[in-house]
Amino acid sequence: MPANGHVVIVGGGLLGLEMAASLREIGVRITIIQRTSRFLNRQLDALGSQLLHEEMVDQDCDIYYDDEIQLFYGRSKLTGIGLKSGRKINCDAMILAVGTTPNMELAKACGLECRRGVLVNERLQTSDPNIYAIGEIAEFNGTLYGITAAAEQQAHVVAEYMNGDIASYYQGSLFMNIIKIHGFDLCSIGLPECPDDPAYEEVVFIDKAKRYYKKCIIHQDRLVGTILIGDKGEFQEFRDLIANKTELSEKRLQLLRSGSKAEPVLGKLVCSCNNVGSDNIFKKIEEGCHTLKDVCTGTGAGTGCGSCRPEVKRLLDEALGNFLAKAV
Ligand SMILES: Cc1cc2nc3c(=O)[nH]c(=O)nc-3n(C[C@H](O)[C@H](O)[C@H](O)COP(=O)(O)OP(=O)(O)OC[C@H]3O[C@@H](n4cnc5c(N)ncnc54)[C@H](O)[C@@H]3O)c2cc1C
Image (cartoon, rainbow, N blue to C red):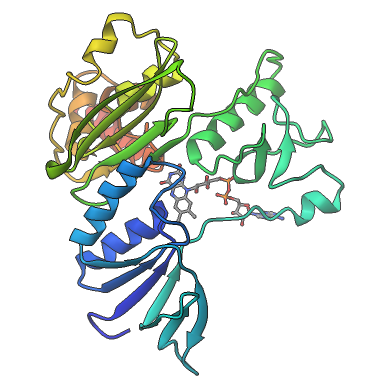
């Protein structure tokens, strides 16, 4: 591809948008084709999608909604694409970011019950109780989670059950989405929109000009969903409130008022979900957190998508190794 070439990204989900923002950072021209009428339509409400759209427009991305690729141009090399709407776009490359579909060939061949994924019960057993399914392929109560946190929780339940804990049940996982775009905070946890039911209430703060949006959805005095745009400092706190089904009582008044200043990133960025740097981690270890769990809880690193946990473990081992070396 020529320097400053043009890439078409098919799919305006988390990965497509993160890829778009990264390529914009190195000067690549970007066009995004999104099949529906807004971005992250399952993870955000309409206002959240609008703010995300504005961010991508500010990043100089061209965006086409309600459209799909129909044609490819070029003989030995891609030179352009044609959309269903009839528009032709010249480009040097294309990236498909349209999600994953479980490969169920093996499961179907051995007669396991499958729908969109391999069906599992609360013990993660398939229709054959001696065969378990977890992670990307497992469909639990009609849901395919597709996030690492869910895969890890499922693995934990199966491991405990196999280890003799017959009370180990899976009850579903919390949907969490964090976009990793440099300088733009956006996450959603649990329900993104209020169901059409008066028992659900919304607490909302919006500053459109500053692209700041905070929404909390409350049901029976418990937080059941949130969208945080412009500042995800409360991600960990809200995620715990939702996951633990904590009664809010007077905390409800603080939901919109906290705005506590997040600790600045120190050192090399390790966790982009919770903005934690290597020196934030070393600081916590020096303060006495000496297990992976304590370091993650103390700093927030590894508690979002979880993909940085091996790096956090490596930093912990390195720091503990240095302590030991000093002590000898
Ligand atoms: C680019 C990308 C970015 C992502 N980012 C995030 C994120 O930020 N946060 C998040 O929570 N989730 C993210 N996800 C989703 C996350 O990666 C998955 O939820 C997670 O990997 C699921 O784990 P898994 O073990 O079920 O499947 P996988 O990680 O897909 O592993 C399945 C493995 O099984 C192997 N395999 C397949 N068939 C067979 C067979 N017949 N025999 C033997 N081996 C086989 C495959 O080769 C593969 O190695 C991302 C996914 C992608 C693709």
